[in-house]
Length: 250
Image (cartoon, rainbow, N blue to C red):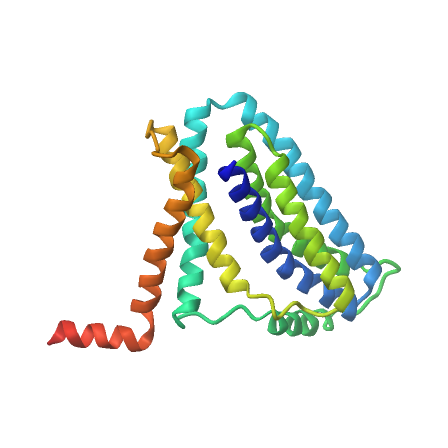
């Protein structure tokens, strides 16, 4: 039960973050070029992602041994989660700029205005919207595939991903503006923790580790990663780094 809740939460948060970025691109296309090809491109991107999950998911479940699958998927998920955590830690420590959706929106608008509409259907608008949704959504599709393949069921991660998509698209339709107030770094931090915890848990299961408390080990692992990440944020802050170097030199 705990694993199901965390799977839904991880898929929901990851989908929300990636769809905020995709929505920024679609809004820029719609405002600058035309809404019709922007929406068609967005729909085509969602359909393509659905086909990827539908085609790959069942084949992985059927043809790959479960223990080997857990090791491989767990390792990939761990790498993926640590990548999200790394970016979140660098942003929280001030060593990497925060993700600014408004700035990205303005850059997309400037780039799109350089291309004139010369055809009855604006293929530039369609292509940019499609690529934005599909490429951002691939990370979500990967998460859905890993969760679903490991458990042999895709309903929970798909429900989480679709819920995130509906929420972001719904808010975007209402306000017609980039969602700049979304605490994206905090959400990425949470997703990184969950993915890293699941990855560690599944790798352990795949090599025969008998986790104490079974699925309850997942939140414990997430807390452990959170503590390490918090320590890294503190150490990597410019002022803290100088203090540590000074102490070492002394």
